[in-house]
Image 1 (cartoon, one colour):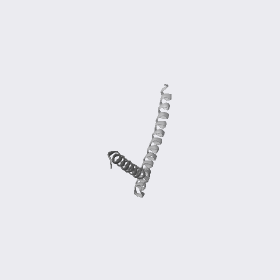
Image 2 (spheres, rainbow, N blue to C red; image 1 turned 60 degrees about the vertical axis):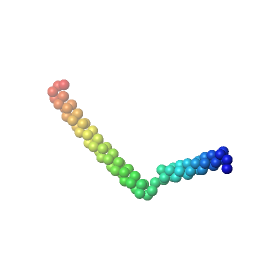
Image 3 (cartoon, rainbow, N blue to C red; image 1 turned 120 degrees about the vertical axis):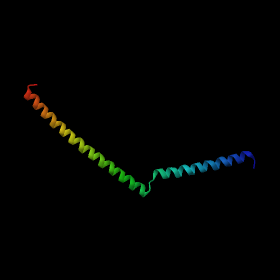
Image 4 (spheres, rainbow, N blue to C red; image 1 turned 135 degrees about the horizontal axis):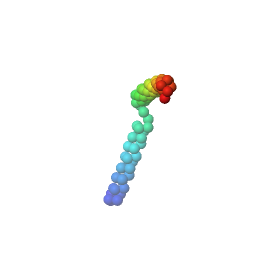
Length: 81
C-alpha cells in the first residue's frame, strides 16, 4: 500500500470510530435508565414539595402583613394621623 491509501484508510477508520462513539454518547445521554428516571422523579417531587411549602409560607406572610397593616391603619386613625 502506498502512503495516500494508508492515510485515507486511517482517516476512514477514525471517522467511523468517532461516529460510533458519538452515537453511543448521544443515546446514553438521550435515554435514561429506569433507576435514573426514578431518581429524577423523586428529585422533582421533592422540589415540588419545597415549592409548595414556600408558597404556603409566603401566603401566611402575606396574611400576617395584611393584618399588621390593618392594625397600624387603625392606630393611625385613632391617633389622628
